[in-house]
Image (cartoon, rainbow, N blue to C red; front, side, top):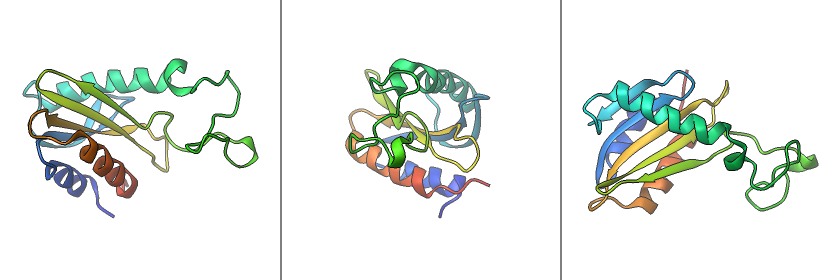
Length: 147
């Protein structure tokens, strides 16, 4: 089970990876970084991506999947979890922002505490493989050890 540095180095091994970070979306702070930042400063990028992540995680339009407030949210298979419980983990799996030259993938990480962190991968649009990057970030997020 990799720690933050190992996780970010593995993310940077993806084809087209330009930069990676682990960000706390409640504070906007980067917990770890690797590679480049789109604006030349990882802390600025962390703060900006945290705003996007916070909006997606907190707005009902993105987390409810059509359920009314208080309803059980269907699990990935389309049915509520055991006993009608809400599925565990962050309410949003990932976000993809496409720019003219690249992709920004924000993968939310489930943690033992408050699940307020995400992996951010900045991927070159011409050299990167978006589908592969999403799969690998999902795997990294599941294996990541924070502590």
